[in-house]
Length: 161
Image 1 (cartoon, rainbow, N blue to C red):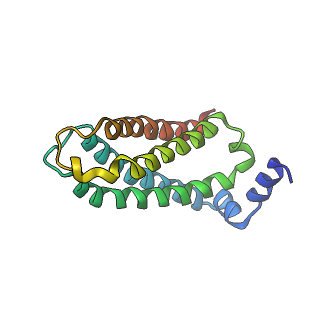
Image 2 (image 1 turned 180 degrees about the vertical axis):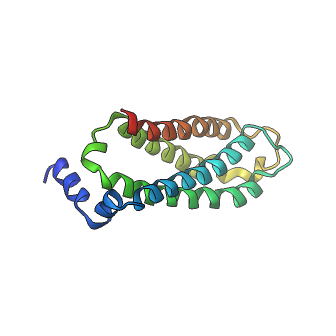
């Protein structure tokens, strides 16, 4: 089966049809997507700003225990609602350049998170209360604070490109 065939099949599924054709389901799904984005990015931004040196009185590990579960929950809601929004118009959206860039950047952001958590964050005890975390932690924060807003912007551009 070709990619376009898979996309057409996805569009024909009951959940995709319900989102696309339901009078209130599409706007409710889009609203859930925005709430998830706000929750996810708000938590990520707080954590990344701490890594860049803001709120130096907060231990990084304490902020991580508080903020990262919110970012995961926000991501889960965003991924679920985004998948439904995509499925509703998969054949059109998949060929949209803004969508393609968005997906690539989500992958890059995910890789950044993976590298941070399997790398420098494992030594957080050594720099937990330091005013300036290590350069690799600050670099991960800078990548994150650059990548996620562009993902959000690309998401908005899907409707206009």
